[in-house]
Length: 501
Image (cartoon, rainbow, N blue to C red):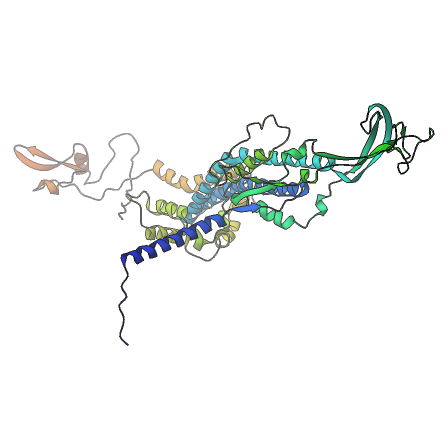
């Protein structure tokens, strides 16, 4: 069977392209929608209290962890700087120098992030705790079970039970209130509430007790009246209602010919049920958070203020890096900071940005590419090194691993730098110079004349290479050897060869 050629019209191609576009848009929308979450678990004041507690723990832990990590990174920076000094002149010196710079950069960046977000996070935590205090007060005000009635008292006044009927009745309603926090024993939703709190950065809405629940309103009272009598003039048996007396004897409610009683009193059931709260109309995407204009005059943290606080919190997330010592070397050398610092450390300032390959090569050359953590690679050696800085001490000094967090650190670093770099300073204080080139007395061309020790001069109409005044004469008189002609000490300078790359 021969092959068939299929021809597509322009309209078919455009339709296909449009369908592909719709599919792509659908995929993108699906991904965006999947990133948004709703915290719908909380149904009661107890549930919301737990949700807020978990948010407080999350935010407080984030801040505390970041602050602790700053100190740990700074300690690593000090340790590696001591190690770099101690390893001066060895192949590991560059590695410790690189680790020092990485730890310093991480510590500086994290410290800046903490400073930028600390006040905002502490404010959110304070609001969540205030909100929970109000929620616990609300739970305390909520009665347990049905109310009981007592202390009935008859008064005068129009009752309205019938024409000409007069009398009032006052009854005291009592209900048992919660005296202990029972939320801790209600654990069935704890796991999901924790998940909701962990999803703070993608939260679109959450459930919270409405503001109206904190006001003394929405009270339902049920009253019953007993008719066919003429008046209400006595307290019924049990002192929980008022009724018409029978021959001046208080009547029981069941046999009273006229009376009234409060049957029940309670808040509306929906008054203390949670409602969905949006994360601010323009803050759901984390781009902007709208504050409650009345926040300073409200008695409680309103749901609007709560939404604003959570919106602020998710914009103040601090990304805490790992300690340098915990990083695997093979992963560390792939990070941008490591590669940039490695290039500067190994090759100095570059005329243009090195290629990715060159940057990676520099990092590998300094650190290697072991499948070990920095601690595993260098920790054992660091534990063996000591610095003896205390006068008269004969114990060999303190391990450098103990010095970064003690007051002796500055002294240890100064001592180490002085010991390793002081040799260079001592050499500079007693310089010597050895000159191996000889002075050319004559030259046939200026390019053969030693421009350092000689000069090209025209003498009697003839150009010649002549020794510079003073030095040549002294050398001639001393068989070509330089001699000090002053009363000062002789200075000899040893020149190191210039290394060209």
